[in-house]
Length: 107
Image (cartoon, rainbow, N blue to C red):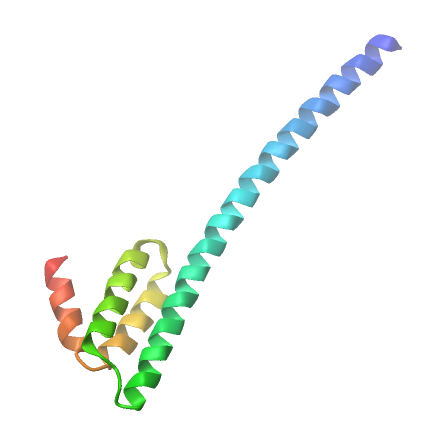
């Protein structure tokens, strides 16, 4: 009986260890995805801010350039459709289409 109890305890500890490892992996993946989403949200908010500035006649080409640079950095880990939507919105801002064309030439 003592031996069976020791074997069961060892097996349960091994299962708990495996579950803990799996939980750690899932938590890490969740945190990475949350970070990616935060970057996307920041970019969408930045573009929304620039669009608001543009509607007031205050958008500056350097701000658009900075937003395009941020987008280029985030693009590899962001969903393609989100990147394309942001590029399209940025291209409608002052200097956006010119800067975007120049950025694509350097890639």
